[in-house]
Length: 240
Image: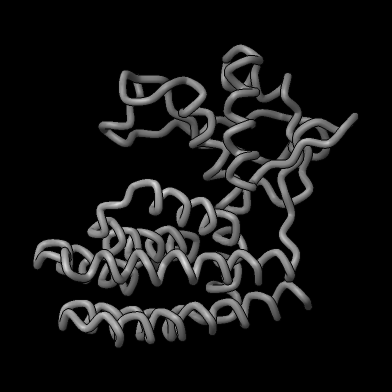
């Protein structure tokens, strides 16, 4: 049995309707570590964030339920979770659709994220241990050696998450992560297409150094610039 614990995945290929036929999903079997709807949510979320399911794709619920070998109720629960995260929208007579992000929505999401992440950073810095700082540095090193651009966005979030977890505010972290997921799929394209990754890495290392110095104001200033630049560039990219 495949489990979250050993991180083994099974990739299956299923022929769907025209709108979904070329998409493959990484699926994981339910374990005691995750509910069945949670497993489905995880697989679909990753498919959306990786771009396997692009914005505007209709999610055929009967086909997905058959693919995952689950009940319609379990699938709907997963889709409702993704709707709450802003990754899926429901429309009359069309069902569930992978949401699309406009430039204006991206700008607003970054504005909200900035308020939340500046606060999270302020709460986190006094509690950052050497172990946590080393973990953040190790993630940056992993990014440097990661050839697959599809993983850069994932590792980018892991870096910020390691820092923000020190704030000890799990609800705040969850809010930030949901907002992050809304722009993550576009950031993955942006980072790989516009060669922004080197600049992002340099900014991350400056931020990490400020955190290690316990300099909250400097760290917040760096984070504000980092996010404002990302916001500006992504909004321009979406407007093209």
